[in-house]
Length: 184
Image 1: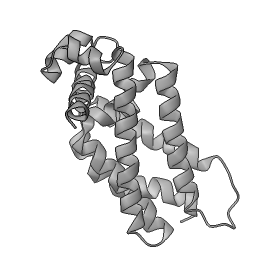
Image 2: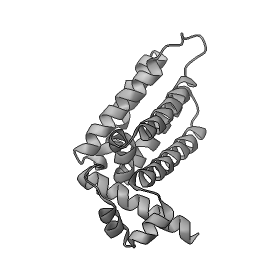
Image 3: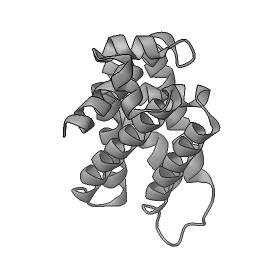
């Protein structure tokens, strides 16, 4: 339990430092200071800065996927599921802008592994969208395109420090997704 708490504290410190400085400018010394721990403790839990980031990325992407699943499980028709899932993503980004920024923006500067983790998560979200499409509609790459568009919009808001306003985007982003995907 103590080790898990330390790992979360260290990964959270990296997320905050990346949001303030960017991944490349963030050092282990910044993480040590932000986590309020020692350099030795950081290296007891992680091999290097990339390993810290990858643990952060896996954790925040898992958390947002759980939020989306919970929100969608309570919704009925496809439009309601899409709106509930989008609301869960927006609430997550507003509540954890450092984690959201790491997952949507900063991972692109880390490594091919980080990009692959993000790509897998985005493909998973596209599959979730695709599951809302009526069976009689043709299969296209539209879900991937919509997830990419939403990711770009959210990333821009995070970079400009507008994470608090994310939930207000719900009606527009729900329409952005449902109109082409469901033909509404």
